[in-house]
Image (cartoon, rainbow, N blue to C red):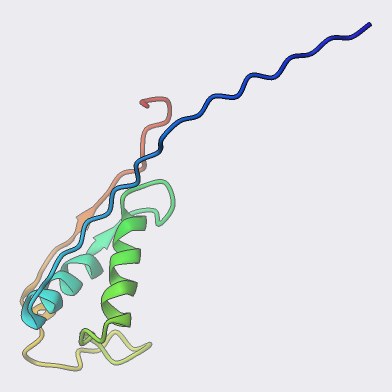
Length: 96
């Protein structure tokens, strides 16, 4: 006859969040930085920059370009001062 037992472990899971308060100029600067991040949007930290970008835009932070064009919309946006970019490599598998 088959026999089975079940063990239940109770654990406390701690979910950490960070709240940052930025001035409008600081938020526009952060938006300009996250736009310059390249890499795979899945499997690298770039996925987090996509989330940050979306949150800033949803909060009403001024975007740097005309939608769908990539053409600068605001001469005084911090994006105009950036050159180059940042690229994240994919996470290495098996390094947990």
